[in-house]
Amino acid sequence: MTSTPAAPPLTADARRVVTAATLGFTLMFAVWVMFAIVGLPIRKELGLTDAQFTLLTAIPVLTGSLLRLPAGIWADRYGGRRVFLATTLITAAFALALAWADDYTTLLALALGVGLAGVSFAVGNAWIAQWVPVSRQGLALGTFGAGNAGASITKLLAPLMITLVPAGLLIPGGWHFVPFVFGLALLACAALTVRLTPADRTTPTSRTLGDWLRPLARAQVWRFGLYYVIFFGAYVAYSLYLPKYYVDHYGIPLAQAGLLTALFIFPASLLRPLGGYLSDRYGPRAVTVAAFAVMLAGLLPLMRDMSVTPFMLLTTIVGIGMGVGKASTYTLVAQWNPGQMGVVGGLVGLLGGLGGFILPLAFAALKPILGGQTAFVTLFALTALSTVIFVANMVRLKVLGRQPDFA
Image (cartoon, rainbow, N blue to C red; front, top):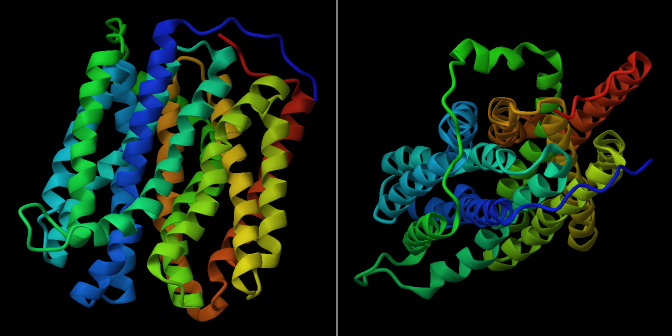
């Protein structure tokens, strides 16, 4: 691998945008996956079936995925800051309403609204791309993407919050306290964003909807989406799946299950800046291949049952591959689509998020056929297929001599 020349430092405004977007996305991601924890006491309280529980945890992922493309277009057109703030405030309203929900139908409806937290990824990517030059976007987008670690906030703190405030007080108690706190935190986050970040610098455009959507006709964009299903969609699916797996398969208490899941989440999130840095320095193609290889190495032994310690260690290895691969994939998106991060990044994020919605449902559907390790057998097969597709197209592009245009 060869390194690329050093890029100029970011402006102060660009650094503030990256910082605010990262902090906001971290909190929004915590909200997006909170049903993985609060769903367990809800399951017990309402007597939910496994299918009802799986649907409840997956519904927010669906909303946050399907709306990523239009949200990315809006961010490109109207400004990332403006759309990011609107998303934060609307999500806060749904989270606060959720704190007073007490029946399954209402929970499903509000879960759709809470899922708006997931669109913050597409909006934040577009916002950062408006301030950071392409040559520095690998590290900047990787730093922003590390906000996936917000899932660990839920896994670590939500079990404590559930027991901290009992039901029957003036504020919502039990599991209701979690969305109540998150809703207030989102309001505070919006206030800080208004106070600390520069105004959008968008310019009027005559581009039609067809112009905005034209990049989506390229097969390459859809391949990027496939890779992001592996690196991000599976990450979301495992973030939702692992707490229940630890509780049901190993008989571990919920708080400890959340801690063990966080050990998967940390590398899958916090290594994203490293993946972006390596992609800036050595090129995202080689980094993506390495990420696929690490995931396959971790998933292969997970296809058989084992004790909890090696299971935890192997899921951590899988998380390392996911963390690096998420960053390298979005570096590819930025390099091949300069000035189109909202629409192309929005579609790639949409497809990745849909993977996070569909995979838990697929795990449940295939479990009678593949057994208790279905989640790992399925992901190994999908990762292997994606690796073959990626390497084949990487070789084809090298033979053709095609390189991204750093406009």
